[in-house]
Length: 313
Image 1 (cartoon, rainbow, N blue to C red):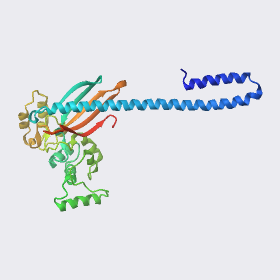
Image 2 (cartoon, rainbow, N blue to C red; image 1 turned 30 degrees about the vertical axis):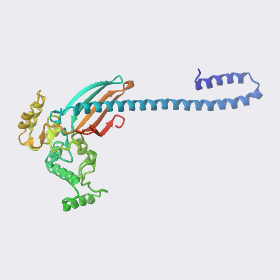
Image 3 (spheres, rainbow, N blue to C red; image 1 turned 90 degrees about the vertical axis):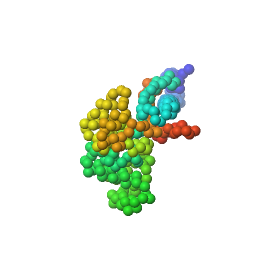
Image 4 (spheres, rainbow, N blue to C red; image 1 turned 90 degrees about the horizontal axis):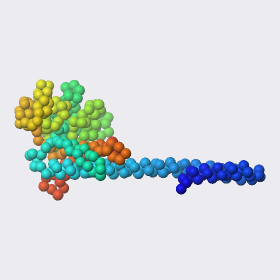
């Protein structure tokens, strides 16, 4: 079966041949026909482009469906695995792989307690993080104060609340501090006085889902461990070496922290960050990430708190 473009091309060739044999008086008719055929050829080209774009759009939709199905399966399996273990013995991190629809999917999970919670972390822990990320000590204290001013309940310390609001208005900002819990780590961009570059560096180490004032020292990044009050370079070096040992001796690790153990724990929170990597059709690599909250003794065993994938950026 001929395509529309091939049909138009062949018809044009036949008409040109007929024009060469036709009397001169009939030439103007053939010229008009050729102009029409030229227009048809243009329309055929536009239609071909439309078909190609439509096929590409369908391919993207198919990949999105595959990615969402793979992420859903990974989250379900992670929640089932963690929910089947008693909280006291539940692992705070782990990895596994599985097959779905002929695709290999790699999954890793880690407790949100490995991050610093913007809503529950003490000021000293927040200031320690900013110092470790390059802020001067006085500046780090100021940034921690501004976070406390953002999250502080509006029904307490009225004088302090009004002072914080006045600072935002004096800075020319078109909004007041929330004076309630952070809903998202992205709100940190709105906190008065924090340099954007510092906020960007802090993003991998903060959360609003842990609900714990302490940090899990088994899974936390070195930048988070260095933020613990009383943590010295020597203690940090010793802790990182101890974590490489298997099996881990959690009580011994905590005891080795000295003064830094006040905001340290080896327990997992009820929220876990799940990272998923998969290969879709045509070899496309897609990564996704979700935060889930495990719910004990409830009809709903878990809840998705956050979801991003390669299609969402």
